[in-house]
Image 1 (tube, helix red, strand yellow):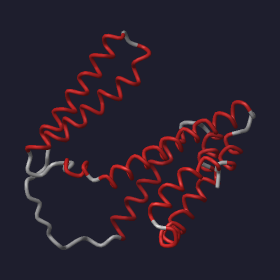
Image 2 (tube, rainbow, N blue to C red):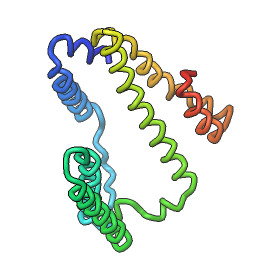
Image 3 (spheres, rainbow, N blue to C red):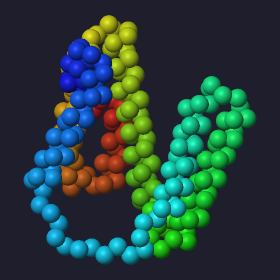
Image 4 (spheres, one colour):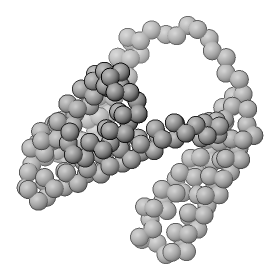
Length: 191
């Protein structure tokens, strides 16, 4: 965020260009430093192209429905949503019949996995919303610069570094259930 504030002070376009440079450097370093895997793995069943195409089409149509809904007639919105659901149904049908599915549908029967994914969706969704609103509040209402906003929100980055270090200790001490249910409830309070 601090880097974003500095780059925005130069020109806002650099915010989109700088990550490309950083990613290229990381990719080059990974190719040079990570040893090649010599073990041969045998993949049976090939790649599920039909599943990939139907799932991608479904996601694109459903996202387009939400994004374009305010600007297009209701009939077009309904048609796009229906097409997205048809593609989603086709994806489920394909996944039931293919030898090597992208998503094994049996995973969706695992209650613990469903709870974990719903918790992650709620936490990430609320967190992204918080960041968006916090940046707007600090810059538009408080009149802070991009750099000041980046420095103020740097605590989030510090938390991202500390959380992986502390989480194993917390899980060992309090258990998965307490950490999973307690963390989202304390997150909005800043504790």
